[in-house]
Image 1 (tube, rainbow, N blue to C red):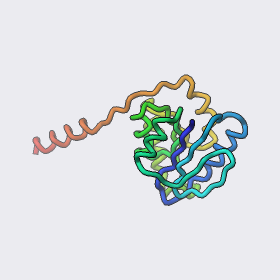
Image 2: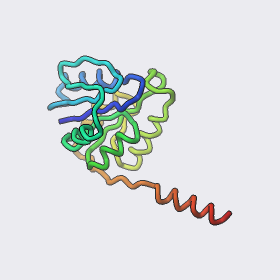
Image 3: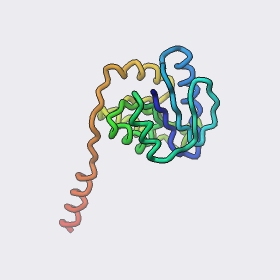
Image 4: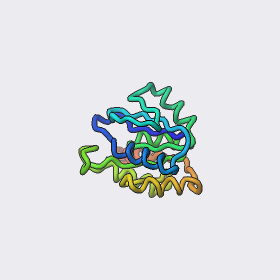
Amino acid sequence: MIFVTLGTQDKTFKRLLVKIDELIDKGIIQGEVIVQAGKTSYQSNHMMLFTFCSQEQLNQYVEECDYMITHAGVGSIINGINHQKKVIAVARRAKYGEHENDHQVEITTKFAGFGYILGCIEVDELEEKISELKDFQTKPYESNNKIFCDLIARLIDEN
């Protein structure tokens, strides 16, 4: 099963669901596809879509999936990584009205650069990233909270 999550944004991300439907038609994506679509209204003959669910249900979908496709929200990405899932993150883009700015491009670039995920800046990259899944190795997430807290403590101590 492939789990797709679009988070809880107040804007839609229809562009990603259209691409996933296209890749299902081409046989690139195979198997059951379950989508937490949030505010994105979309009809598909290939995917089971719902708007929102409890955190418990969301975690169950993440736990049971073979891999995740997600918007580039930090919470969604880290949830997948912490469940040792292969994650493809696709950035919402301001130029398409999917977000206020392009911070998801930065998130995608950083997490992919650290080797945690496969990242797509544009949905047209999704087919290529799916082909890379077979050889992609998940990497445990290392939070920088301790480094950040140590830095703050040092700055306080110095002043």
